[in-house]
Amino acid sequence: MSVPFPPPVHSDCDRLAAADTGLRDAAANLDLDRGQFAWCRDHRAALLRFHRSPPSAWLGAHEHERHALRGTFCRARGIPILRRLTGGGASYRDAHQLNLTLTVALGADVTRPPLGPWPALLGRALQTALERLGVAAHFAPPHHLEIGGRTLGEVFIAVREGVLIAEAHLLRAIDAAGMLRVLRVPKEKLTPEGIRSARHRFAALDDPTLAAGAIQSAAHEAISGVLGLAPVAVAPAAWPAPTRAGTDADRGPPGDVGGNAPTRITHRPPADPAAAPAINRAEPHELEGFVKAGGGVLYGGLRPDPSGRTIESLVVHGDIQF
Image 1 (cartoon, one colour):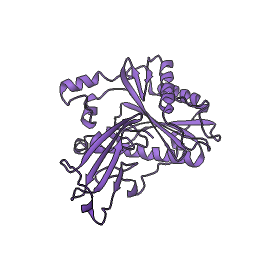
Image 2 (cartoon, one colour):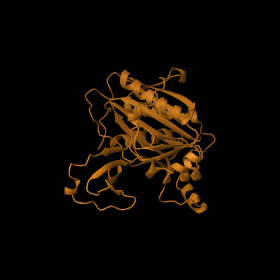
Image 3 (tube, helix red, strand yellow):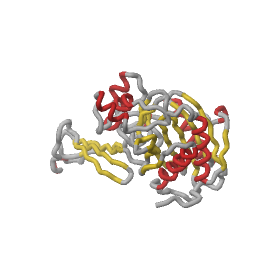
Image 4 (cartoon, helix red, strand yellow):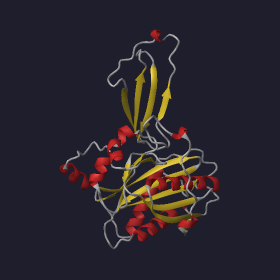
């Protein structure tokens, strides 16, 4: 599957404006992402922001913290937990990563474009940018950038209210211990050997001659090229104002962070629950399952009511992108 060329960008978009807003705390960066999204939605624009965050844990838009993160560790160490605007799996950020947020208003006739091609389109644009700088990176489907088979970065995608949202991060240094302590990574253990093993699965843009500004300029030019837009640099002071999170309606199950939270469905039992067959339950009184799909893994947690004959609630979540 391929994205039509030129991609279905809104006809009012003729340029991709970009800025570097520097190092800010994670919550401030999320608010800037929201403001950037709202601006593109309301003004039919295309924006690209480069930014960095101190140590922080980022859930995908549809994930549940319990499955993706070590929340107890994060809170004990003061590591904030936030929810990205995009789908995909949880990620760990620190000040040694270069992050970017791209928001593009799509054509008025594009109601629900397929997301599948977009990670490849943008991943290959970043690959082109790095190749121009002498870095032998390549895009590895579905959403990784790699050097020699080792992960350099990831690309996450969403479409909301007619706006394509893409987030990517590139490693400038590797904190394998931080990643393993924050993320629930089933392949590695929290031991010195596990941390060393994890370290060898990642690559970094750690060449001291490779300036962040050069990476940003190359990425801006390459992404503008695949979108068919003119690259324009703007001052951070001219960037759209941040937008804070909405009401509690944005929040997920108790104990979960806000955002596009996991879906919770609550069912009122029928007048005669005894007429329903009993549901076999396992401790802790919740049934769980998962389904692997093209866009990730979808999990479900079903909690029967005390009688075991009707469903009290169903929570659906996962590292999927849509």
